[in-house]
Length: 623
Image (cartoon, rainbow, N blue to C red; front, side, top):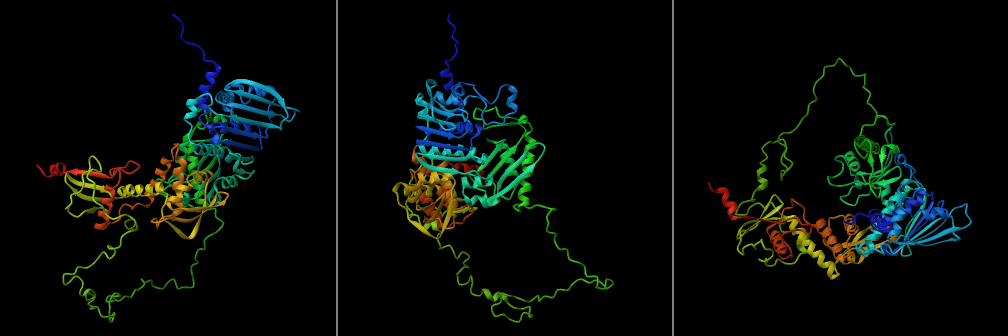
């Protein structure tokens, strides 16, 4: 019987390893830029084409490589960073495994040109799909120039699963930002299809944050600077007013390396306590300086997860450091006895006769005073007959009108079409209300109760309005026209690079929704007009939510982006829980709900309708 176990060829093993290290074009950018940092570069240029599908080029002015090192660098586990297992716990470099370049050349066509300062000529190497093609001396500047072409050209299945150009570019920008943030002394630039997207001169950490994410964030940053025997923490956290539900900029760096750590993120959130709304997040940019022997970075192929020796102690230090900074900058209540300003303490007047008897102060008042009296009678007379103010009210069959605003319809009713007949076939389980039903009623400002043939229907009024508005805005995007209302005072908007890229990709759709936006350059935009019907909302916050939805979208089909934009608009504009509705408003909302394509659920899948059938009701009244 033949043996069935055999060794895989190196080319196949490299492709398998590439599946862990090189997941998408952004993975290549991350590895090459980190290598440039390790090589001591002070200037790094990144150029990509078609979202990194056809070209990723990284040029640095680092120390470069010799011809032998350049050839050996593409072998698996070839590295200059470590020599023994003990070195894993004394790492000061970004890379160390020697898998990145081997994984990249296994799934792409790579050209490397490099030269050291001590060499007269450099070296140019061509490798395609792990197959060595050529190596020759060339004239080249000091440093390295990597060209990665046609990523996944030899694995069509992997290439097929790449996302849209916009999505892949967003991922590249995200990885680029993570490396650029912590290496403030390095000059960075990023270009896409020949157009410069980001340009970052050497700067301080705070200025690097502003250069990447806009000038608006500068006023929201609170400095954190704490030193302890276990960890040194330096960086910034956002002021409470910078909190948002989604898309908060949250970055942890450990010894100059970006990491994800939800446990420590909770420590930051814990420090804010109740000064930010529940469910919202604040931005933070925190660098942790820890003894390398106390951490293990070798637990994940992309090295974005790090294991700490004493996480619970670090949690407490991080939370305390953020609390201290918030109190120091008056962003949270704090007792600070080190302030230079000493409050004035009133001095007792000793000239007063201390032997004089002490008596309680006397307060005079007029028990008969009535400020609501129509004729303003003598306030010293207690018999003012204030009941005369209400003469004629509630008499002659005319009740007192306690709801003077019932006849005023809110904006969402005015903008909706006339009430139409309910569709009995709207869903398979929801029956239409009877034509002669008892008037609808509202329960606790959250539910609308509607008698139906099978029992009692409960409608969640906010979820119902979200469904109705979603279909309205979705139609507007499809039709390509919606009225816009100009702002009396146009609002200035500072966008991050990912948000600016998302804005470009969905600009036509935003225009069809009714947004009028113009660019001032440098990530700064002006919001001149907004869709009609969103009065009372914060237009900048609404635009930010829509752009965040567009950034999160990973599909190739724009229809999904349109759905998320319409859903974001609907959730922002929909009535809030607790809003009292008139009988006419409830009728219009129910009719419009059953005129929608799916009245039973919101676009997010939340239920809208619950039917309590007659048998269920009767069961509670039968012995």
